[in-house]
Length: 370
Ligand code: HEM
Image 1 (cartoon, rainbow, N blue to C red):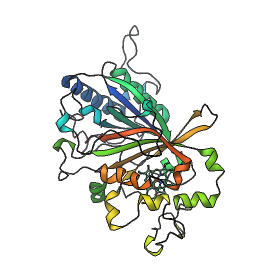
Image 2 (image 1 turned 120 degrees about the vertical axis):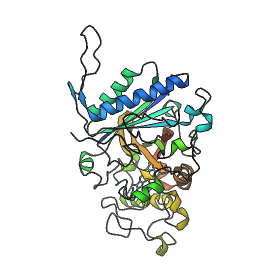
Image 3 (image 1 turned 60 degrees about the vertical axis):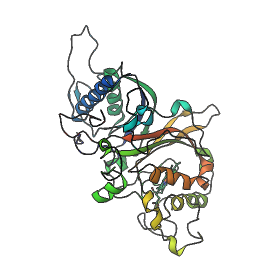
Image 4 (image 1 turned 30 degrees about the vertical axis):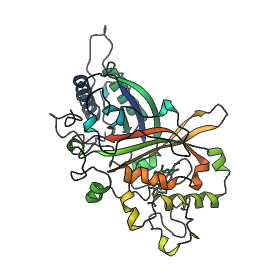
């Protein structure tokens, strides 16, 4: 019954080693004034404290609806659950009078050249990233939150994702493999390095951001569909040059081991790792591009079949950074036109701000904002 700590300067579910199961759920907030918004944040705090700590579901008179869905049995166990709450730019519109408190770089996601955004899969006032060891724990948590907030929240879109159980069990030691068959997450900055995380992931108190936002993080979520049938007919060599890495070992092309550093200085023409390879564009490793680091925490998704009979699968791309412009937006602009684009199609997502952590039992989410 692994338990993740809830209280702290930062929320759990960001540096936490990736659990096997996850769900992204975006909501529209139905509250129409600041008092009800505060009630919502207090309620979410109470529910998330309960769900992540576990305990017995309260019993009620059988003439009333049960207080818990029951899908985990009478005893709710933590199961490594984290529920990470973030807010979209739309929360800072005129409804709640919070316009002046919006994190500086928070904005509505707009279309990139290769995107086919489906409006039904984009944006949201709130986003929950729910992760746990098993799907039923994730689903139980969502059902609990929805049951307790009928007058305050309405689901806008939702996607479930997974990484291999093997990788999840390794507690971050084994890099997950995505549905194109490549290790995904290798070059992430080290989450155990606190000062690096303060620079790359967390909003600090000298960033010029509103004081309440310190300790939070910008989150970019992108639902990216893969054309897997087409990919599976692509020669291995081409797959590898598209990413710039060996498929099985994950090593940069020309190197031996997964965590070897690519040596771009000695390959200026891209003979070994093409100049438009995904990793080279994403992180050219020059002093100038150091500021565009981010922490990726993606999951695979797999649904049914499209109208044209193609498998619907892909990546729930999620990344965290202290500055959305320097991180995701800069990197995505460099990736525009990359060779990988032929095989992928971003279809949804949005930009959010993961709130600072809830510090202690008398605190609640966004208390500094309200
Ligand atoms: C690296 C896959 C989209 C940013 C990688 C790697 C793979 C990969 C296999 C190499 C291993 C690693 O370091 O993790 C994909 C796939 C994508 C996708 C399949 C979508 C279809 C994105 C997007 C961004 C991004 C949208 C950001 C805008 C990065 C970064 C690296 C990376 C920063 C590390 C590069 C390095 O430091 O060497 N990706 N990625 N990726 N990707 Fe992506």
